[in-house]
Image (cartoon, rainbow, N blue to C red; front, top):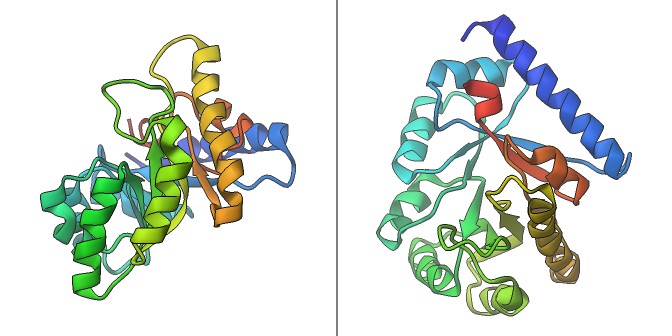
Length: 225
């Protein structure tokens, strides 16, 4: 992709985020994570050059490769995919800025063991399956607060920073809105426990997510496809 096209797409995205943000509140701040799994290193460098700093990958192997190939840039890497337990050590080596997809207490305990063995910590978001879709990972909304507190209590090497969810995969906007509002209401209750990040919204629904309180969005196709 040429620079002019990328600039145009990025400017348009920023403008749309600004419009949605102001609808919520002029004091509301939203971070954009550019999901780079469908693009090449050259496009990541180009977007970085235009001012984007946070990038997300959904496969551990891809994250490791990107971290190595782009190690001359101080990119803020986010891991946003489902994590298999046999990939925990690989994720620790990649050392992302934020792991957004901690989807169960069981995974947290497995990560805790490896993190402690390596003498490191990792910042994470707990993923909630607010749409209650079988195809999606995440903690059930009813159990979210209990599991969040259990992870905080039993996993000292995991620094929980908040919540992540994927909006309902339907055309009915009211159903998507409900899935975002469910997560945001849990986030509000967990602020007393140090929750600061509510990561909701992707390329097709980020404006609605921001209106519902999201302060971090994960967008890829809108920039790279």
